[in-house]
Length: 273
Image (cartoon, rainbow, N blue to C red; front, top):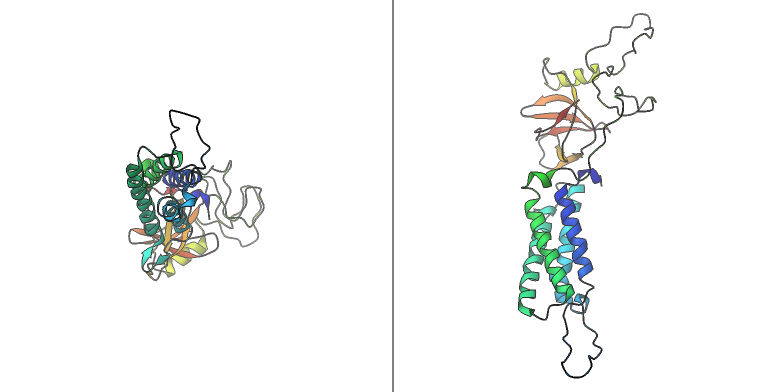
């Protein structure tokens, strides 16, 4: 999985799930020493001593977080027609609901494991609900550093041909000669854009007024097949540049690094190269 596809909201959810898992090992109940006499040695139980409590309050939140993360890596995967991410959200909310009423019912006998578990479960539920709604939580968890110098398409940062290049403003089109270099006999002047991409766009109905361009997405977004299938064929990740070869209604037909093509339906906020 590309870690750059995770958002800040995902980071909050993952952190809360880790804290919830740690709380399952803490003492779930407390013990008050009698006022007279010494305090006897008591082995207080934790959540692992009660399977029903462990699964409903603690591991349900951890499992829900795992489903949400897996849904990022494999978008479109479903169980009985329900998206994996939706299953994960339901598990996390169920964990918070169970934790709240469990701790309320045992007060004032709640131990460190119960209190910390309740707080972690509440943060977990709040994170999965707010992540798709709050703009600050929808931002990428890790920003992608921009290359120091633009490189033309087909040249790696080290100057070695064959890489998937960065679309800088001073780049030369694919296959063009650098300024000052002799051109072979009979060679044409370089085109304004990749001739192959232009030909592909015209053959697929992109129109002669569309010029292929480079772009990057602000957050991870699915790429759907050109046949209109609802299942994504790939996921565009922030920090990577992709080539737009055709306008398809409000969306773009994009080409990935491995040559796959699909339709990017959500083009809001994309950065053009």
